[in-house]
Image (cartoon, rainbow, N blue to C red):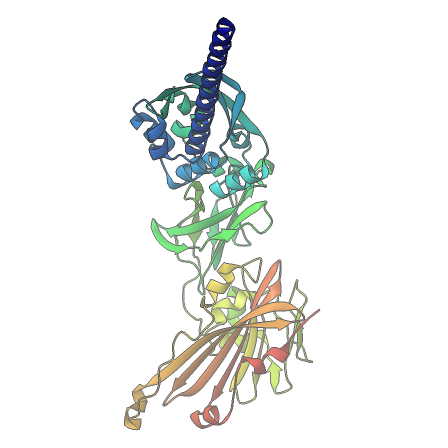
Amino acid sequence: MSVCLKRTVAALLCCSFLAGMTACSSNNGRMVLNAAEGLGIAVTKRNMSSIEELSSEDVSDLADIISFADSTSEDDLRVKEKIASTLTYTVDQESLTGNKNGSVDIVFSYIDYESICSDISNTGSADAFERAVDGSGDMTEVTLKFDFELKDDKVTFSGLDQLSDLFPYAEEEFDFTVDYPSFVDGICFTGDCYDQAANTYTDSYGIHAYMEISPEGQSLDWSYTYSIDRNGDNIYTSSTLNSDDGQYLNAAYSSAARLEDGAYTVSFYSEDGQLLGSSTVEVITTITPGTPQDISSYSLFYDSPYFVVPDDNVILLPDSDVTITLPDEYTCQDFNYFLSSDTGYTDHADNTVFFACTDDRSAYALAIRLDFTNYESQEAYDYIGFVDDGQAVIDTEFSEDESAWSEEYFQTIGQYDYSVAGRRFRCLENNYVGASTGVVMTDYFLVGDEDTCYVFIVSRSFTLEDYGMNDYSADDILPFISVG
């Protein structure tokens, strides 16, 4: 009986020992899996302090990799961080092997950035790349096996070098510079005064040049600028423009007087500063500057194809749907009358449509066709001096000492937007008030449609007394304009 009892006790002690070993092994496996979870979190967050705490190896080389220390630009760094933000992990618990020291697979995934980079339409900018990442579900999967060791109740891993496999793009350079020059042809000059065979403008008020965009490049964003140089000196640089139709880049330069002789170079640039093309044209002047004494001979120098003298004061601006209807107090004058007028606009006689004035010549109106295809283009705004903020840019008051008025004046300039039949027309209102000269109020309305551009000008003169007693504004002129 005693022998049997001893054997039973021994068996119980053995089972207890084995159960303890099994529990210990299970606990070790859980610690390894927990450590693998911690490593997955640390890697996807690129948390170097957490990786260092878990690693049994020096992490300094990895730190340079996952911080993208070799990034060459802000966009380059931005793209790498965007790719890194897609990194996810899953611990494959079924792959756990070992006991006190175990190994386990961690499956990492990140966006397939190479397929995105192969599409130029998506890599035109860092913004476009980020949008493409957000809209893509294509992932690259990488499985890494790590060895974990439990020592003094702490689990560490080895195989640190493998983590660089998750950041193959760290040493790449993401350059989003589109080769815009490869998508445009050479520069062409146009205009009535241009002789293609001689490559010269003769007695011209302006230069118009364009570049054609190839079909392959018409899907790109064509923001560009252009400059005009005369004999090597810059005389004009445009603001940033956009191609109106995605097929052509246009450059236009106009002057109130005929262009001086010289070599004029037109240069186009992409928004990121690449030179798209440059070409030079000669300008020749055969007409002596100055006003001829014999007014009748003016028609030899100026020949407007647009000028009209309607009896009913109604003028349809050519090639547009804009009509100007003048009040009865205005009378439309003939071409020679306009040329002899002291308005300061006769240099634009080639493109003047009409000229009208009141009997006392205290007010006059005219319309000039501008060499801009779109009345809303920035060049058209710049041409007539529009200000950007639409507010008065000058507002100085008279001196309180009336004896000083003979030398004093003030000027106000305001930009306003008006709607005519749902179409926006901009107006520049220039009020010049002089103590001895009275008030001259000139309104410049930029009118037209998508392929024509006119400036409609109305100038009125008042005495200081009249100016102070009446509320004159560009609103008074607006009823002159109609569309349709």
